[in-house]
Length: 249
Image (cartoon, rainbow, N blue to C red; front, side):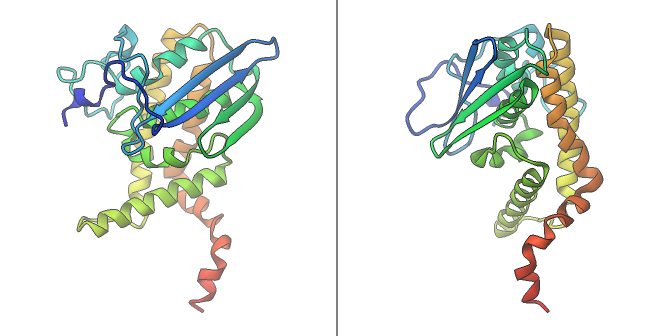
């Protein structure tokens, strides 16, 4: 598959089998913003309703990530920038600390949180970015199938490490090299940090207010911490597995 094949297709009708996340942002002044995200149920790829509209700030060379493996000749626009274009535009007049009530509806359940706008946007940006087709963020895409809108650090650690280990199991099952030391996970998140910071710089040059930028900063906090303290984070999970450990003693 070529780089440009990763970009969103033109307008398409979403089927009832698609995965979806309905986000509803209610502000104290009575205003309301709604966003629906559709994902392909098999590939977990983001499927925008309105197709792909090029923009100057979505060009690959605009604040390009240092770890980006894409070629401008084959893929002139950044997949991540294209996927988050609409939400950045929708909230570019909002401040990160604006109070908001966020409701998230999925096929399985609903979620509610009264929080800051930056935290609500961080949740939705996390979905859009890892499902955009970015080759760096693709490794995190499996987690979106079981997306948790407002997770704690411990919940995120459990989902992240569990997803990584399951990925390694499938690699081994298919005769490929696997890593069960979490070294590979640390390397993944080192690159994720580069993507997050580059995207924040793109948005900073574009937005009138800071909500989207600070939402990305929130996303980056965990990405920065993983390479530095993955063992410490995992240690917090160890007591939950005492029944496994008991069997070996």
